[in-house]
Image (cartoon, rainbow, N blue to C red; front, top):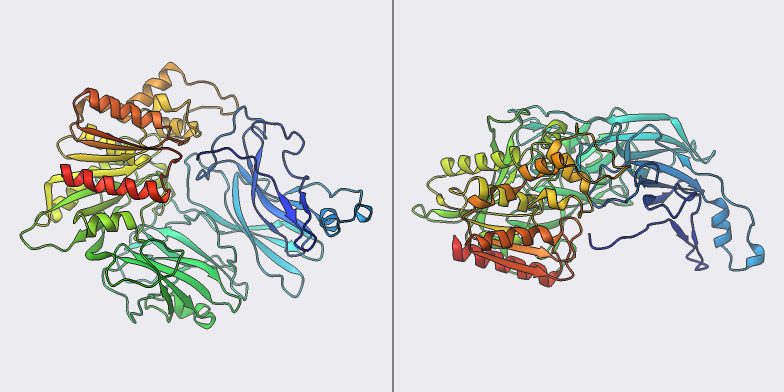
Length: 600
């Protein structure tokens, strides 16, 4: 979020130390183009003579006047390409100029010419007949939202002929509009919901099982992350059922989030598992268990616990303390069904509830996630474990409509309704919880906390419902879409959020917004309700943020101060959108807790 990079493809020979650029790539005809192409996710083909990669088109065939932000922007036009590199590889194998070939490699090939979005190419090991399979995530028609439901496609690759069999392209898993509600104990449903479609950023680097008959992938399924097996024969999707805590039967009301980290050389799997009150566990699933059909039934399969990881990170190993953030509270996944909205899917919530006496009523911090087209899962989150266990706050994560993991229609329903549909979903979830748990939750002590789109919702909620939300903390919030549209690296978000995908805007022209458009953007912004805000508000800003420029939060802070609303501003130099530098992140969350302690 804090810098601009022009990414190219390079090959390094580890024996000679020679490095060379892959020049036969899209955009090489006019490398000075501002739009250009961004290249990445490269890998060698099984024959070793081609490099397969993703090319993200900056717009207008690489001729867009301005290159837009691409990080966490799955909607950017993209295709898979293959560039022959035989000559380049031979030249890199020697350090002597006289032994190098004077010729050039052939032209690149477009592997997915009729697909709007394609990413994450992965090869299966070749068969004895010299055939392989290339799997990838894609969307045939594309989407305007920054995330979406993906399809899983495969195409054949002839190792002997050193080329893709483009005509052998077929769809294994398609998108799902609306998942079905399911009340039985079927192994193919999670929290009473059937498969909602694939919501995965990438396929694992090694995603094919040893026999090549299945593809393994982690995907968002409602509020839970699950490891899935996809049959390469018929596309059947089956969730893998395991529990690294060693329970022989499914735990009642326990919904851990699990991730596939990699497949091992012996055909097993390295996996991780965590819950809001349990830091990550690292585990191993043996190959014979992984290939068994029983692995996808309702009872947990045999798995081996490898390590219990410290609460501070899931990427390091250390001795576990007897006391850690996470103990002292329980969690619950709730299905809330609001009456409003055109797409009827559950608004799922993850509620963290500290231990308390029967006579005690806890303050509630509501947390709508950022994105907005992601989801809060039941994975362990250090900041919210800290607020719940040490601050003794009930925490309510709300996966409003527009979140990933609930089908294509629900996600896309937020386009053009932001500031209304998502706000009402959050408010309905709060009212549901305070009514259902009135003896445990104090309805007069409700605060709200969020970053990016979550900060947008926190600010909207305090303006639209000042009697409900008594205090707020907003991190890099979107405040005024009209003033953001010409300064952000994702101006398309401003249009799609305000008008939906039906609004006509040609980013190849990159014109300024019209008077009408600016008025609609204002109406969809929290700043339209600033005169109604009463909640003391903490604003935290990464001063190098290009996605939501710090001017947004400054506009909110000064507007509230001028109206006499208690406000505090935290600025972090050198930080971008996430504010995730170790010192900055720690300072931010300590100040968030202090703010809620003071005002809630």
